[in-house]
Image 1 (cartoon, rainbow, N blue to C red):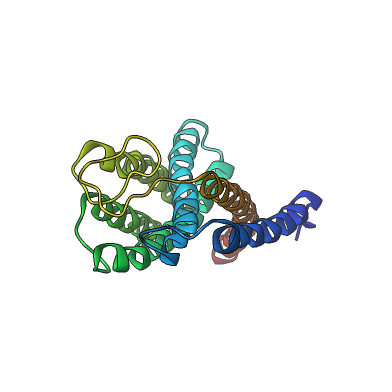
Image 2: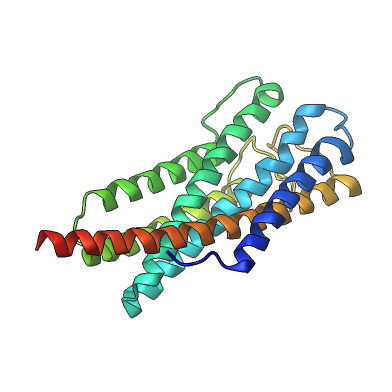
Length: 232
């Protein structure tokens, strides 16, 4: 097994520090929102996890394109890592959104366009792993996975833009407000600081988890190659 890179160890430490800082800024530094109260503090983690989730899905689609062009297995490993880590973060986003929605909308879930597209996006990437699990040939699995990741990547920008294109109760906190939105709020300077700290912390944490998953993927490939040689 390859020795753990020093930079990855540094990222481990920075991830812990960053998440601690994000928690402090969200729970202590940021002021209590006047209408929604303390439940609004979920927003900072909700936005942070959504950010890295959607970015990861886009990166997976780009990695899929590069793999189809180069047939280099490292891009397949990158793609798998991006989808796996992003699917985890995006699931957390949906859960946090439901926690926030309960006091804001008086319901845990509603089939609002933004919520619906978010749920569909998560299901799309759960199906991605089901597809890969059903294909034994490594090259065929990587090729089909790359095509699927490329097509699935379209759901990320759609999920981001839907609240700006359709009438929805989901608030547009950053960018032009939607007159149909419920539960929106104007951010103070302290709130903006807390949001950017959370975005930075989750970005570092995302990179850290991606690196770990890519290294794990390389080990999985070696094990699979050994199994293929033994079975021949």
